[in-house]
Length: 91
Image (cartoon, rainbow, N blue to C red):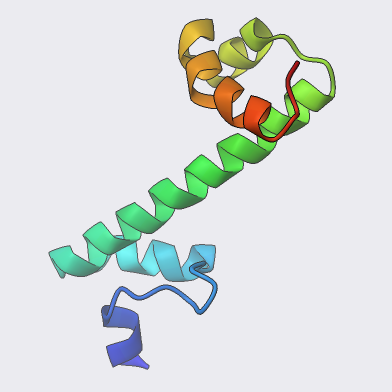
């Protein structure tokens, strides 16, 4: 179990539980801690995509989403609008 924890490898589907990630963040081995940072970054990106899609599908304007994320309208639009257009979710 310890070797598995220190490997920094994610689960088979690329996901780790929050408890596992939290433990890795506190690990004294920099390789383990940095791998956990990468996993958290990926998780946050996926959560942002899901919630931006949810907000747009619910009729939110890009400015409302930007305000909620505490970023500029331009940055959130540049990050997500093209992806949404490619998925036929934007007009």
